[in-house]
Image (cartoon, rainbow, N blue to C red):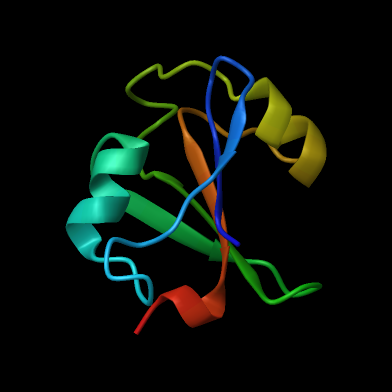
Length: 85
């Protein structure tokens, strides 16, 4: 199940509106703008965040950064590759 990690330290299970695949506008809304996708090789999941999170000075996402061992800024979505068409 996809998870949204917020900058205030919460995590929430989320799902696409159509229950199958996320649309570009859904992801943009979740991360606050245009996004980038990082594919994790160890578990076949995507880390999705605002593509200019650091440049826009979005808050450091402490929870997601500590879990994934990389600095992540703004809201972060983690999901399996199967949630994209």
